[in-house]
Image (cartoon, rainbow, N blue to C red; front, side, top):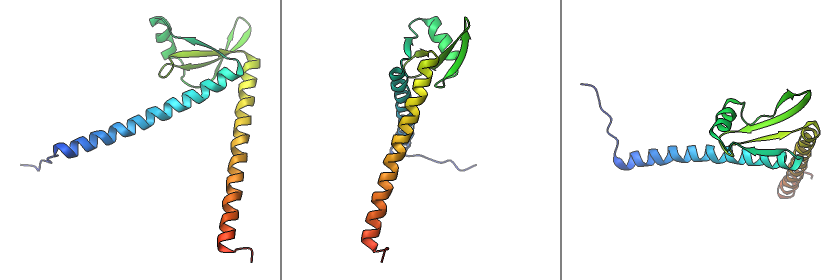
Amino acid sequence: MGDVAVVSPARGLLVLLAVMGVLAGCASRERRYADANEQGLTAAGFQMRRADTPQKLAHLQTLTQRKILVYRIKERLVYVWADAAVCQCLYVGNEAQFQEYEKLGLEQRLSQERRTAAEEDEAASLFNDTWGLDD
């Protein structure tokens, strides 16, 4: 007969808790990503529309998720961001709102880069002060 691995109940519980922790971490990262995008979309003037009927939710689930897509509807461009998992909603905007969203994203990235550069400068200064590398 082949070998059979026996897992103690305590070890099984630890494995289950570890798997749940990983899944919870992914879910919270997914939530943070969705929240950050929703804040930017709202700040840019996009309008949120809830999937408040089974038909809307079913359609929402068919769309590309958490990515801005552009549709031409009645000779105008409509920008759409769908999220069936977290908010069960759709954000809709026009060209001007999309441009504002892009601008806000660029400003946020530049701000982050400035913070990172300042932190690196501070770390370099501490490193230099501690080890006397400019002697």
